[in-house]
Image (cartoon, rainbow, N blue to C red; front, side, top):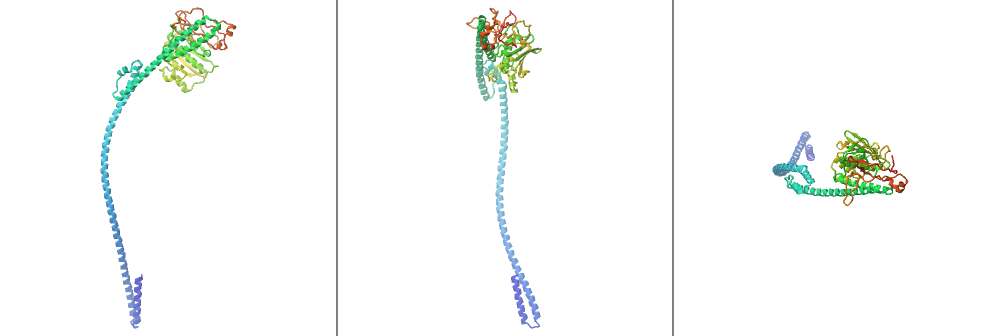
Length: 504
């Protein structure tokens, strides 16, 4: 607004000067013309100024547009260059991806082929391994256990196709052969040792029986105690023999009454005084199986006594049925936990003996299991009516025969009615005749070698017998053996009277 205002003021001043200088008649016209000229001049000046301003603004905007266009062109050039670079990189990436795709496809095809090949090879190896484990190795074990050498067994086996399997089979068979030879040697050594102990025990018992006939009451108690201790050693030898697979050392030509079997079993253990027998029926056990049944029952009775309080008794009951003869050994100890009961049941199941079952001080149940497998016994455990555990032994009909009624006066066991004397029947030393080199033949405990020479010794009643014994002789078991009766089955010898033995 500054320049147009100045022009208008200048025009106004010029008009005012002209009006002053003009005549009075011309003054209105001059004034109007001056005013109009001033207005026109202001308008012209304003238009000129507006044009100048517009021109300047247009120039500024044009410069700005040119600068913006330059910047845009520069940015476009940069973008185009970058796009070209990126396009080139994308093209290279596409080419590389195509190469990788083709390579991956080729690798996948190669891997699929290799996988098929390895799968087929693994199937062949798996089949070879399965045949090796399920066919070849069992055949090798069978041949080695039959006594064949590793080389002979390997020669007769189907050979695997793989070299590694062949080497593995060779190593396994040779190692198993060496272990089998060691096992057989150890078993043979144990069996030989057990046989020698048996022979020595039998000879010692024969000497003790001869001394029992010769000596009087002053030493008879000591002899009876030695007799029972020696019979205990014989039972341990029998245990070793059973575990090594040796046959029983004793057998009878005729069946043995079930009552004699029970008395013989109870007389073999330390706690025989706590065993109460409840015999029933007239069945008899085959002579060739009587020793095994007697030994199995002795182990179960010994186990029952070991796990019962010393003040409680162990009851043995018999029941005959069409399935055989059931013998129940009941103790009053604590009931077995489930896991212990399961292990005990497995031991007596009659399955082949697992050496790992012998990893403890108690071998009795393992012996029972071996005898059960040999004679077909079936042994089970159940809770006892006395609060402990009852072992139920089923003697199968194949080794049971109907027996004759036992003669009165035969060796009575410790019966439940308390009326019979202490058992001296088929006991710790029941056995077949045996003669030790360098020693005269004598009656082996429990054997039926022939008539017994001389009368049987008897303890005389009276104060002298009790005075001559030590206080602890009351716990000594009586001697136990069977007396032959012609050609018939062995009968228990008449018991000696024992005032010190408790009656129940």
